[in-house]
Length: 390
Ligand SMILES: Nc1ncnc2c1ncn2[C@@H]1O[C@H](COP(=O)(O)OP(=O)(O)OP(=O)(O)O)[C@@H](O)[C@H]1O
Ligand code: SF4
Ligand SMILES: [Mg+2]
View 1 (cartoon, rainbow, N blue to C red):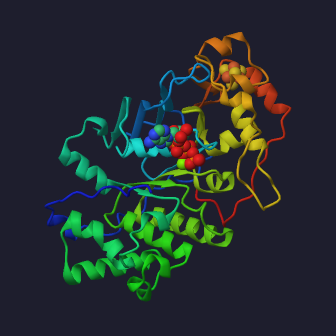
View 2 (view 1 turned 45 degrees about the vertical axis):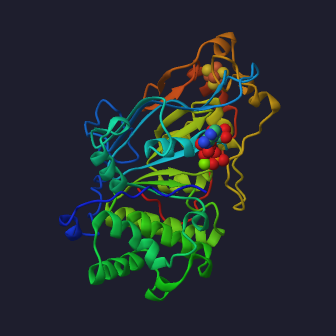
View 3 (view 1 turned 135 degrees about the vertical axis):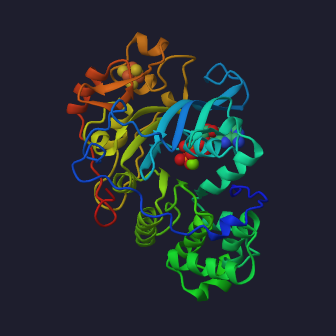
């Protein structure tokens, strides 16, 4: 069972007055340089990112095996870099085991990083003091895939939501009750749900409780790890719409992990594609969907089924994918345009095309990959829910 973000004691009487609403995220005017439809070039975007991750590595000890790249280590996250700006949603996609959850847990310091840096609002989290970490745990919260597994079965909904407030804010009595009531309203639950235990709630209601707990301390950043994949399709849409509404009303920023391309396409302004512990492509979501530059991204999008029943991306795999070369591009065993160079040299990120500096790809041959794209049918998954969150 994944542990929720560990709360820490806090002497913070002033924080009691902090409003639940942080206010809507500043939205770029239509057609401005920061609009989703315009390529974000890192050279023109001068804002300081809310979250900045550089060359992050999280390796786990494992049995040595010459067949695997492990050499005694499993490189779950292996040199990941990206920025998330205030008010944006960065979608993170990739096959099972590519390191998405480990990346989120490393950002929260639930697992130790081996190398690299994570800056949140300019503070280096990997070397943060205890006081800075306490603030981190208020400002950065996680929404988990399986709400039942992360809610204490012996606590009522209101006790679950109140717990971080009680510990971090030291509020009690009427203040606490009214704040919990406001949070229940925010996640569209009635006061009657407050006294129920997790097993007395539906899956969607449990996820709403998990979200209420996550936003209780007015965080700035939510790491949402497959927040709807354990729910019915109809409930998925409700929870996604709730997340969209909360982002607008509370000024939240999301890192959204999902297998579901329709969800990511709907919710995210920026997209990162992970493969074997690395981000192989990232850029504005529309751009990556329209012009996927990495052969893996092309396979991922081509694998999406468009009949409305399944938008989970599951590219064809073979035993060859399990054999990791000691060096070189991790996609080499499956790539139809691989050369000897791919087997020996790990590709660095580079611009995917001349038109968009913010769209980058880790491939030695982006031009050849572009030609490959022209021959591949790319799926564009239908949205599950209403108008896009742009
Ligand atoms: N604590 C751990 N110890 C050892 N290996 C781990 C640990 N946590 C994760 N791993 C391994 O790291 C790799 C990445 O796991 P992770 O859970 O991050 O993948 P994921 O992309 O989130 O997959 P999924 O989409 O299935 O949730 C996997 O091979 C997993 O077995
Ligand atoms: S670097 Fe080589 S193997 Fe890797 S995706 Fe590009 S062409 Fe394929
Ligand atoms: Mg995961």
